[in-house]
Structures are given as structure tokens and as C-alpha cells.
Length: 477
Image 1 (tube, rainbow, N blue to C red):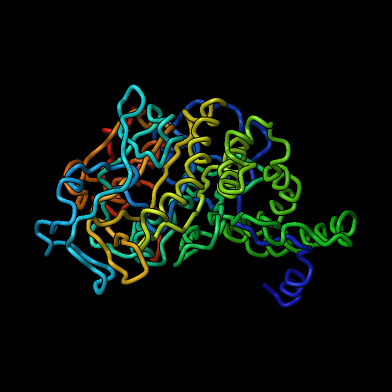
Image 2: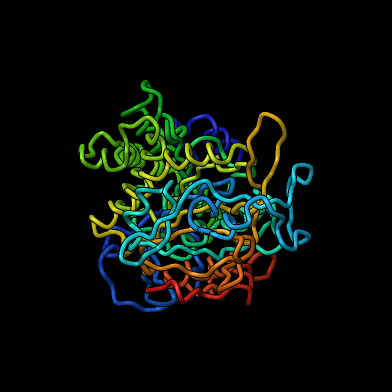
């Protein structure tokens, strides 16, 4: 880039950010139904819609990532043995792995909350999740999640978003966007919605060594929800149009001098998309047009549920408009102390909006083609963590056995998969690793994890490391 053009871009973007680069569709015919035909992994770095390698069950996904480690023992995995042996030492305590060694104990701690069989399926769900109980027959509860050789939050979140516990790898949303492109012309294909603080170690929505066109666009919980999208008032209208026209001419001259540079074309496309988003994004994020019934369903008028309700409702509106992957980040589940009170308050803020999202998608005919997933990067240990005087007990990290739930997009309803041991410590039946989870998601989108690869330093890389992941067919309808 020459100095004149660099100066122009840096000084005259007029409020248009270099957003997570979303799709430029051809206007003629590509959005219509076409005969299915498998194709190889994409070779051009664009967001034109692409056929997967197999017939897909899902077209979109909403991941509600509850960062910090929701306690499966209080929410989704009842363990009567904890009640029976409360206060006694955990058998084989030497096998426990503590993150907070100085506060560790081997004393078993039962949950203060009861479980109830729900729906026709009889899935057992905690009293803390009354709204989730009403959709028990629409979800699969996976009780056997496990992250081998991972113990802390950042590594766990990396594993479940990128397949690896180390930094520097593309996220699931980036891979889906790379493999399938987008179904919207005016919105990003991959969006990250942040509720509360950014999770430690973020961004987990980065494209890393995939071209930046596949990076996630951040939507904040406060205005402006998308930074630098709207130009200052004195630059709106004709002034901006003239500047953008001049910028387009410079870009095209620059591209003509460098034919075949796909990444350059993508960066140019991002500026064009940003201009179109000034209207379309504002519309998608405007919740004022939702009906009173919908607002009530999500808990939008309740100050306790409002923040997550907004995120879940925005996620539905984005998927409705063709966004491929939406990830809601809610990091506040790391409960080393005061667990009983803390988890009650937290579930009261998230249960209604999360269940409402499934109900709303189902009522609009979108659930069949949209995977919804809820959970964190770990669970909690079955023993007491004692933080000392003045703090009631909590639970330490546990990545060897924890729970998530899933719905839609070809996932079974009213199903429980796998199990932890009698005390909820380790996954002992039908364990599901991050590699299995990702292989299953890719399959539902019609993508073969062994064929969806990207060349880095002359070597193919993939979301699922070769031969590490298997599709969890048991949770598929």
C-alpha cells in the first residue's frame, strides 16, 4: 500500500470500521435454492455462499457460552451419592486435580438444590432452571463432556472454541464461515455478543491464520453496539458518499496493480459491507419493534434478565437475517466460594432468556436449521473448596466431567447422553471431548472435518486435529 493510499484510509474512513469481514453475495441467483452438489474446501477467500461436502442439517448456530464453569452438580447432573456421603472423604482423593490447592479439601459436598424429572423424556433438571424444564423434550443434555489435559479457564475456552488449548488458532465460527460463506449480504456472517466483561484470554472470535474476512464482529451490550459503524453527523449523506466513491477508485486501482490477491479483495469488500451495515445492522439490533409477547417471553422488561434477554433476542434476529454463527459470551460462573447463593442468582438471570430463545426459534420454524448450545468450558469438583472465614464453600474447577445442553439443527430432543461417575467427577460413559463436539457440529453443517482445511506454512490445518475427533451419532436425530 503506498503512502498516499494509506494516509487516505487512515484519515477518511468516516466511521466505517474494519469489521469482521462479512459476505458479499452475488445478486443474481445465489440465494435461491440450488441442486445439492458436494464441493471441496474453499479456495477463494470470500463470503459467497458455498455448498458443503454433504447434505447439511443445520444452516446456523447460536452458542451461549457461560464462561467460568457452571456447576453441573447444581444444574444438569444429579448425584444422590453426594447426599449419602456428604462431608465424608472422596474415594481416591489422590485423583482430584485442584486449581486452588491451598483451599482444597477431599470432603464431599452435596447440592443444596433438588432435581426433577421433566417432560415426556423424564430428563432430570435442577429446580434452579424452571424455564429450561419446559423445553426438556427439545434438548439433549450431554453429561459426559471432558477436556483431556486441560484445567484452567483460558485453555478450556480455547479448546471449546478453537479445538486446541493453545493460543493462535481460528474459532469454530471462523471455520464455519470459511467453509460455508454467508447467507446475508448486509450483515457479518460471524458475530460475538458480549454480556458483561470480555472473557479472560479473549478474543475467542479471532480468525487467526484464516484470512481476516472470517473473523467475528463484536456486538456490545451498550450503545454503540458496533464500534465505529456510524459516521459523525456532519459527515453523513453526500459527503460520505463522495469520500466512499473516491476510496473505491483508489482501491480498484490498487487491486488492478496486484491481480489475484484474494486477501486484498476481501479487505476492499469489508469497507463496502461496512457502508451497507450502517442501515442493516441498526435494524437488526433494534429491539423496539418486537411484540410485547416476545419481550415478555425473553424477560426483556425484567432488570434481572434484561442483559441476557437482549443478547438472546439479538441472536435470533441475526440468525433470522442470515447470520451463520452467533456466540453469546457471559463470563461470570467461576464460583470458588458462596456457590449456593451465587449460582441461584446467576441462573435467575439466564434461565428465562436462554429457554426463550429455543421456544422462539421453534415457533418461527428456525430451530430445525439452527443449532443452539449452552454451557461453559468446565464444571466443578464434587468436594468442598474452603476459602476461609467469612466465605461459604464453593467448588474448584473440573474439566474431567461436566455438562452442556444442545437443541435444534438435527440434534435429538428429550435425550441424555453419557454420564459421569457416581460423584460427578469424571466422564465414564460415552465421553465427549472438544474434538468430538466440533466434529459433530461440522457434520451437522455438512462439512467433513478432514476436508475442511487451510494451508499454513505449506501444511494443512483444521478445526479438528486429524483422527482426534469422532462424530457423536448418539445425539443426532
